[in-house]
Length: 549
Image (cartoon, rainbow, N blue to C red):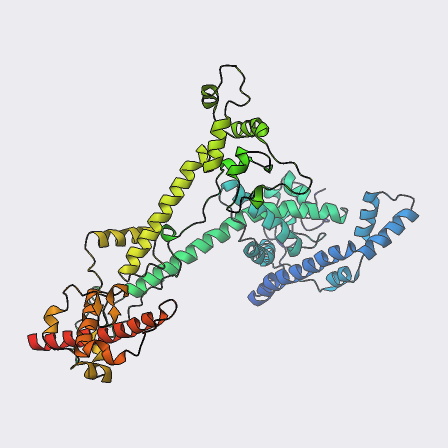
């Protein structure tokens, strides 16, 4: 007897053309069910998906609670009481226990499935996407470059999302596929929800199902993201290229606008910001610390007072052995007999090579004192180790070059702080090739114009002196020895001219002129005179300038 497609109860009538049951009303029409409206189906789809996610999330929280120390202690006590305290039994007992979160998940009112075609699948896919989207966003920092990495990332996102989207024992996507005979397969048959599974088995099936769904879902999200980025880029391009104003209805040519009054906008020239330079001295101008080199006396320890010729080498000006080489109390110093040990140390360190040793071998064939004279000579001059001579030479060369460059730049008033080594070399080359004009050590006339000192100095020197300022100065200006003044000849000539105009400073002489024990009074006078003469020279130059122009 045939079965009812909506149940197993046989219908009390038979079809004369076969065993297939027929409908009492029409053999070609199935019983009608009341269809729900669009709004109710929408609620069943969206509201049902939200309800499933809420229930699944509570179940995940309940699972976490089951493995808390308190719950595991309870499970251990129950397993021990049952006589099986194995780890698997303890975990199984913990999973079987219900907590308030499980009860809360089951108490959420169920929402019926939508009755339109594919409604149940749409509801489950929507429920899956609700947790999958934020989980995928959280996993965004995990860059996936290769195809394998992308598949693994999508599977991981799907496995986690499935745990929040569904409860372990509620029907999900695999169950929907199995309900359709044309789509049934062994994989979804295994993965579908089964009330006979324990929670661990159920969640393992959910993880496998979620990984299968997560791979295409992750690819879809990446495609949507790329498309959105492309749309935003096109929108920006269109905004830049869009003509402001009405367009020609027959093409993209802009319509000619009425000529409006031209307003010239004020042009504001931005201030050019001078890049800030550092204050670090370039490496090429830095004087590094002198390298430590090995010298002949480094191989000598303490020297005995009775070592004869060896003692003479290490004596200071008072005739005593230098403190560094003087033996301490109860300490024995080195004698000439111990030079063979010194020779061995020096040879071992490469101070002497084998060829030098062979050249000093005596006729007796003994090499005990063969190098004595050479060692004493090297100790006396404190010779540098052959391997360190080049190191020291390079340091001295670099140090002299750095000092020379710094003096050259300082003399030309060039601030080299913050420069690179290349810039320093370029400046030095420019100075040496006269591409930078020399700096004159003089004060601008404008600084002193109108000052009382300048007005007072205008009548101190005769006009003929302008032509004689560069002559060779005499040795004395009055009672002043000009040879002891470290100043240009022009300054000395000015002192001499003033001395002549003031009777050789005869009135300033009062007995013996005292210049101080170290000549400090003379130096102070020369400095003061130099400053005054600089003012006079500037004044004279200004007068000449006014005459020429």
